[in-house]
Image (cartoon, rainbow, N blue to C red):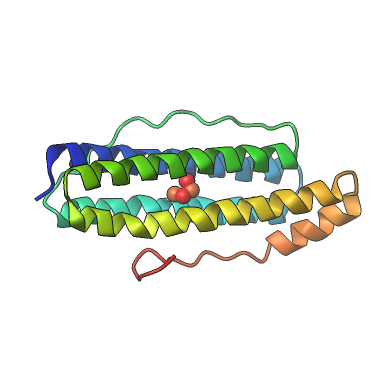
Length: 172
Ligand code: OFO
């Protein structure tokens, strides 16, 4: 059985994963509007990933006898200054998520909830990957700034991304 403090903190993170999904769907729309379907695809896959993160919390809260409580989701921005700016904002957002996951882990450890501590290790690893993926795209965007031809090639590259649900197994 989950302690109330842990249950509330898990629900907060579940709700915040919905916001992440919403933010990336908004970015997918922005890139679609710029006629960059590969970038849009990357963001749509990111949206699917965030939904899978939400569902992992959903399953866990229920498995531990807790109750899922949904809240309102804030409206995300709908436009950015440039593709680079959108990815810089993505990195900023993911760094905040990492911070939140770390705080959630601190709560679980303080409550000596070893099962939740163990469960959250998946998210700790996932955040390392999330930040690395986004940083990699930012580095490429900085390299090609000003070159439409290179942007077109990067768009083709990002069109290859496919969603793979890693939330049921062990490592992200
Ligand atoms: Fe759920 O990892 Fe991004 O936000």
